[in-house]
Amino acid sequence: MSIRSLQPRLAEAGATWLEAALADVERRPDALAQHFSAVSRRCGRDPLSDDDPQGLRHGCIDDAARSLLMGALALRGADRANLLDDLYRHGDAGEKRGVLRGLRRLDEPGKPGERDTPGEPGGIGAALLPIVEDALRTNDVRLVAAAVQGYGARYLGQEAYRHAVVKCVFTGIPLGAIANLADRQDAELARMLVDLAHERTAAGRDIPTDIHAVVGAFPQALDRPDLSVDLLSALLPATHVYKE
Image 1: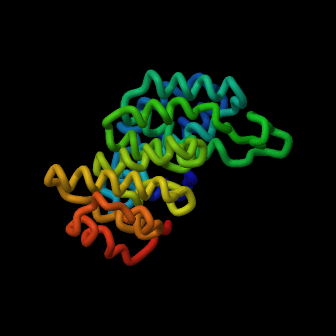
Image 2: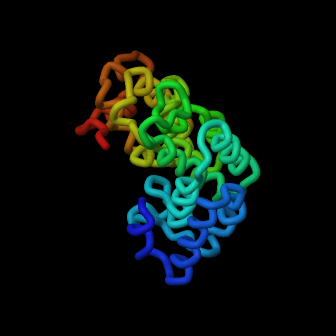
């Protein structure tokens, strides 16, 4: 999201503050931490989309503002990665989410000739994958959802990505909040989701309805003798394959 597209969502005072903060970070990278911590108070915390009240998929206004501040950094390479790692490690939950959601912007191609990581022209590469992994170890659903946005969904290994999806289902995060699922879902993930559904059924708990689409893409995951008729009936009516 650009400053122009975010401005209509901000109060006049918030928009003025953000413009000044962006200019300050461009001049003084070490000012980022100071402004980062003030974003929620200055710009607000409302979700960016009315149909996403917790901001699990699209994030919130403060997430977008923090992403813009990160994009204003003139630092590159290890200096930038170290600053953002420190910002995450010492930030509160909102600041951690802001870093995670802002990483996608920093992983986009930069100016010709800029290279932060071999094979990643102008992008930050996988340098900050450890903070994604840290977020996935928490039980904060908004932090976990931020970890499976564009950056995390790109750099997590396949096994780690599968476990992240299962954790989202387990903690009630909709699969629609996970980036790249249409491309990265596979038969093993479908099997893991069937296992989870089996466990939840045995415990008398409901099965999340959105796992049907992943299972429906790999129906062989249901070809096993330990599934009850009721569970098969619940999982078989997968009428569409998950697509973003």
